[in-house]
Length: 490
Image 1 (cartoon, rainbow, N blue to C red):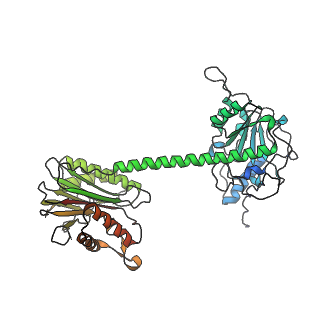
Image 2: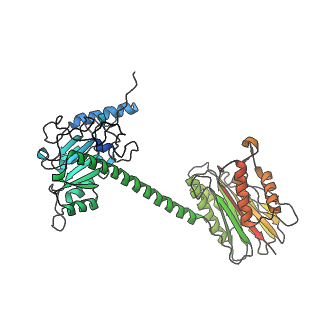
Image 3: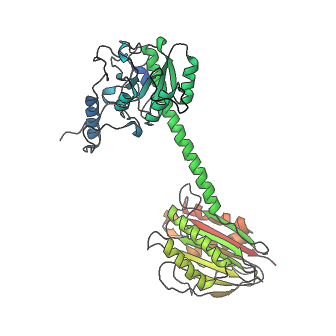
């Protein structure tokens, strides 16, 4: 079977009259292949026009050509009915068959219109013109391959305003609602600048005077209108995208925790780096609160996965942990309740979360530790090398085993210490030649010991640790990273 030949884009010429090739124009749908000079290449050919009743060209022929081109492009049959034409709500087509630019002229006397001179463009190709005498005909002819609409503002309005007065721009507003993705040129009487300006304010791309119009001016106006519409749509989409990004950023920042440590002598620091590109929140989560009895509770966790669903589940678990902690739960009872929350909120039965909780006594010298499939915290004390807390009684991750238990271990901290809780993103980065090995807990402990020896503490230490892990990895880490530190000084 021979390979299908793709449809040719429009190949217009410059307005100067010299036949020179420029990129084809696309519709206002935002096709980047449409050049800004394309519409200027066309004028209307009287030699090829049929008698003007409703359409200058045969719509069935146009629809058949479009459909044949679509099939040739993708090699698949069109599922639409043979008599179904694409509507304007979907936006104009990216190109037109045989290199034509399509104009829909809406005027009650198209046969005698002065805006259709018998002119050819410099390449000898006519603008493909469709004419409609009223809005009903216009709606039928307004298919996706129309690039621009030329509307006579003198056309009778579809209805009177609600207060009984006539709206001079009612017909324009009707067309703008009918074709929100098309460029619209308003045609008005010569000298009626005020009405033309009002039409532009209402949404038209430009206005033209009927008695001053010629083929060259029309060609240039169509080009500018199509490009202006395309630019306006692109700018609007960019603005909407920026607003959504700003809203998402504010939402994500609001979901990050604010430690509740009022009245505690402990110092708090944290670093957070999501693995998802351009995200502020990942599947890792942490929190720290002080209960009325003076106990400081800290938690850090990791939901498997890195997407927005995992981030949302992490936020739910963090909020649930804070509520349960302030309600007086801790240890095995708290983790069991969190597992129920996870089981009810997760989107898949295979999703689980690791968790580490620490409750530090009011005197700050001892703590209770619970591990649910999570790496053990790092404890640093003066005169001793930093070391990992015991993890022999590490329980399973939340969501893996129904009815699981998580024993609480008692840990002696001493009078002065620094306790670092972290997620596995900090230890799973690649290191060494060829990045074939992972940093691991031993590598992390050695790194932190060296940084402590250099005098780094608190926020400065965490920043240095995360940056060094990233540098050792040879670039950004693929996993989320969360790390927090609590310091006690006498």
